[in-house]
Amino acid sequence: MATTLLAQTRTALVVDVDSMDPDVAARHTSATERFCDMTSNQAIVYSESIRPERLPLFKEAVQKARARGKVLNEQRIVDDAVDLFTVLLAKAVYPHLTGRVHAQTSPAAAYDTEETIAHAKRLVSVFEANGIPKERISIKIPTTPESIVACQYLEKIGIRTLATCLFSVSQALAASEAGCLYIAPYFNELRVHFEPGIWKEYKDTAAEHPMALVIADIVKTYKQIGSKTLIMPASIVTAAEVLALVSLHPDHLTLSGSVLDQLAALPAAEFPPSAPAAPPTESSSDPSTDYLASGGANLRAALAADAESTRKLADALKIFGEMEDKLKDLVRKELTTTT
Image 1 (tube, rainbow, N blue to C red):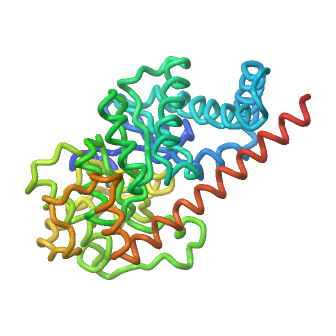
Image 2 (image 1 turned 60 degrees about the horizontal axis):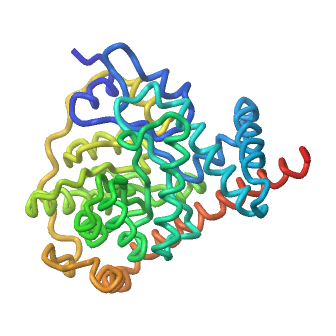
C-alpha cells in the first residue's frame, strides 16, 4: 500500500524524472519503484554545468570534442561539446530508468526543418557512441510548424520524438499526425521557473487553471481519434498541480526534483475525482485538419490565431536559447583556458 503521495501517484500513471541530477533519481528510486524516462532541456543542462561537482564531466566533454574536432571550426567543436555533455549527464541518470533518455534539439533550429533533423541525428549518434541504444532514446523537439514536420520525418526513419513547448490542442493534433511518441504540454509557462512571482495559485487547479482545460481537451481529443501519442505534462511546480493533473488522466508526468521531494514528503491521500469534461478550448482545432501539409501551414495558421500559445512558445524558445548560449560561452572559455 502506498505510504507517500509520490508512491500513490506512481500507481495512477507513469512518473518520469525531469532532472539530470543522478542524486535526484536515486533518491526516489527503490527496488520496486523506478522512473520510466528522464527528460531534459537546455536550461537543465546549463544548470548542471555550473555545479562544481559536474566540472569533471564538463571538462571531459570539452576535451573529447576538441580532440575529435581538430579539423573542424570552433563553432562545431562547441556544438559537439554541448551535445556530448548533455549525453554524459543523461548517462549518469540512465541506470535509474526503465525507459528512455530525452535530449532537446537546439532552439536556434526550431524554425528550420533540416537543421532540426540534423541535430536530432547527431544527438542519437552521440548517445549510441556512449552506450545508450536508439530504442532507449527520444528527441525532444519544439512544436513549431517546421519542427513538427521534422518529427514526422524522424519518426519514419526510426528516431522517436517528443513534441515539447506545447500549449494548444492544434499543436497536439499536429504531433499526433507526425507520429510523435510523446507530447509534453507545459502546465505552467516556462518563465515561472525563472520568475516565480508570475506563477499563480488556483483554489481548484483542475477546474480553473487554463492549461488544465487544454490538457483535458487533448486527452479527450486523443481518445476520440485513437491517437497512439502519449501525453506527458511538464513544467509542474507543486504537489497540488500533480493532483490536479492526475485527475485529467494523462499517460505520464515528468517531475522536477523539487516536486518529487514535495510528493515524497506528503502522506498518501485520496485522489480528487476525475475532472469533469471540459468544453473545447479552440474552435479551430479540427481533428480532421492536416496540420503537416505544405510545411505545416495549417499549424502555422492555428498558432497565428492563438496569441497566448504563440507567446508562450516564443518565450520558451527565447529562454532555452539564452541557456544554450550561456553553456556555449562556458565551453568557449574552457577551450581558451586549456589550449
